[in-house]
Image 1 (tube, one colour):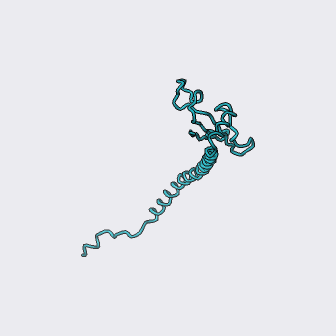
Image 2 (cartoon, helix red, strand yellow):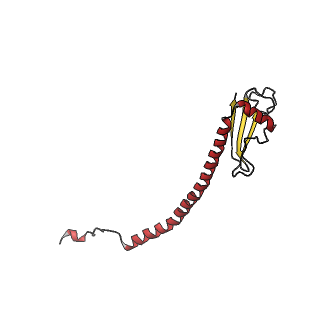
Image 3 (cartoon, one colour):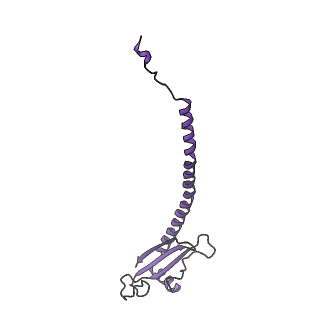
Length: 144
């Protein structure tokens, strides 16, 4: 008698049960994977809008920074307050209207009142651009 006949045969390939089980596991895991991808696609549109608005704000800030300091001083004086939009703001009916605020700035707090808009440092201007009705804004200081 041959001793090899008593050894179990080596299985080649997968059985029907194994294939069925793998298919069921794959089908069950597809639902959460599709939901995760759908969420990522939906949020990418929101992030795209935010990035476009941020670029829109930065472009307006760069336009204002290109003005002469004396023009900015005049516009700040015309506005009268750091909370009143300056003439560099977009028109009233503009889509994603950008508001520009200007004010002379007290960088060293020389008057000790902790309000940067009361005592002023000569030649220092605060500039803020924001999209009306949103929390998006960009601020900068510019010197003479």
